[in-house]
Image 1 (cartoon, helix red, strand yellow):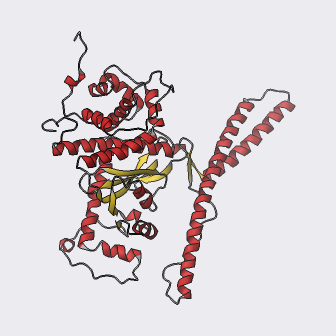
Image 2 (image 1 turned 135 degrees about the horizontal axis):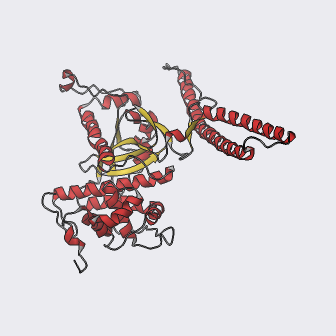
Length: 457
């Protein structure tokens, strides 16, 4: 060991790290943003930094300090870094923050690479779903709209009391019993933050109220048009949006763009983001599109998530989604102009199957041309073809989230803010796709740039 060691001799030929390095070199990336000086003292090859992040995320190491430590202790990571390079955590953070465009470019090009390898079809369906990922903020650092108003009133009262206390001490020519200026500054700082929180909640509400008001007026007009045409109007009358924010509307001081959301199947609440993914249902289970939203539910996420699937990667023919995505407006927008066919449950479906449910039945009779979108969707999912399509949903996208959370160990964003959370989710999906593509190639026994997969992998 007196001479330098060739790290290649310490890793098997079919190791994941070889695949990542060769794939990064093969896709000809252009969008690198280097850390000209930043917080790190050294410059490193951009392809090396990208490979380092992908490999570490794919093996469950997301923290920059974890990655820095691995450059010293992990043979595969040392191999990525050339054996003697050790980027510090500041350099890793800076590269990750500055290269959103690179991650997005890599995401698309790796999927195109999968097509070249014959493991991803150009045409086919996608399954869309979302999962709550904890934000890098505690829900205990949040305040509700009602509580913010109460605390503002309390603090303003305390400020008046402190001023009166100081004036009384001046008249009595004696020193006050506490540091009044310091207490005033502390309360005034807290007041400013609470007023900012309340103002932000009101601004969010007003933006949402305008959208809901427009929808309310459209519904009223549609019902009025039906009455004028002599048609029967069913259902309850639409209600106008409320005039002020809900008392429980939240603002988080650590990450203001995150939201309190139901998680764990609705069993608890956590400060989180709603991470969306569109997954291939044609056999590869690769992620074809991702986005992150601060919306606590999926009702308006069908179109935005589908739009993240690049037409260069997939010509989408079918879209599968659960009942949380069903919206007549969203379905109509997706299917307009000969768009993909949507298979989304119009209401929650029971997972329990009775004996009679297991018996094959004839398809229901065709609907009339006047059927609503909801009626058409229910009919579609009662046909044998519709049932077969919809069954693919839980077999594809749900296992992907399970792998990301349980195998990769990604359960919380490290970066704060919606834009940075979106960047990190893209990086997580990129790492997942590299690892999944590696497994697919191994299963097909396809050599990558001359590297044959190792037996038994």
